[in-house]
Length: 109
Image 1: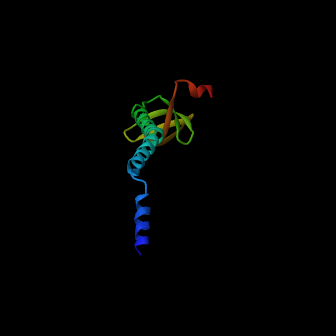
Image 2: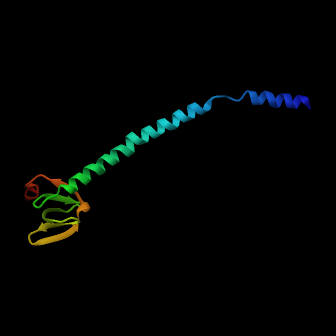
């Protein structure tokens, strides 16, 4: 029986030691990759969109999230009115504006 005990102790001693630091380094590296490739660019885009939405003013030419081009007729705290054709005005939330266009772009389309 002592033979089996000696073998079990010898096998246990052969196990690699110090793997915790390597695993921690790998986890930190994976988090860094996710942060720089996914999290940071998304927060930057969201910040730019919030800034653009807060700076909307009457007369701006915009594109909605649905792809509709129009000109802002009025801007309130929560909503905007967008003229998408002659005498056709729709009301939508400010957050539904995806981007602004340079002046005169809609006439050239």
